[in-house]
Image 1: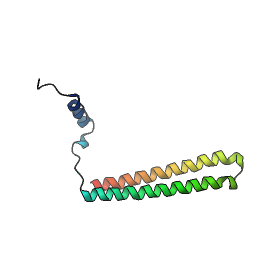
Image 2: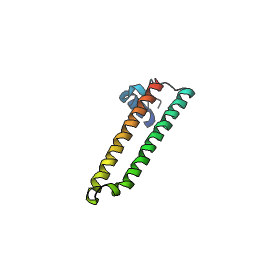
Image 3: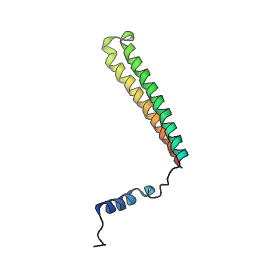
Image 4: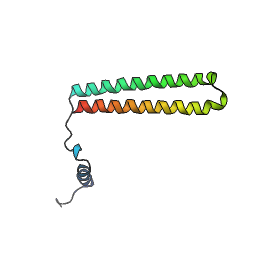
Length: 101
């Protein structure tokens, strides 16, 4: 009976084969956790600021452009926001990864 493995053990073995770096992942210190938390808060604030600016631009949009162009302008502003948000998220992840190593 000792030769049988549970589903959890089999899953763990498979995950180690698929992503070997998980096996060697080191624990992070309290100082690293604090820095990571600070970075997350900083980027969350930056993204929130961009979102507020987007909402303001969208509210003022109807005063600046004709009604028939509103849909296109709205989509463009939202696309621009999504790109900026993604850039912030990527930069945040790079900073966090540098702290972990």
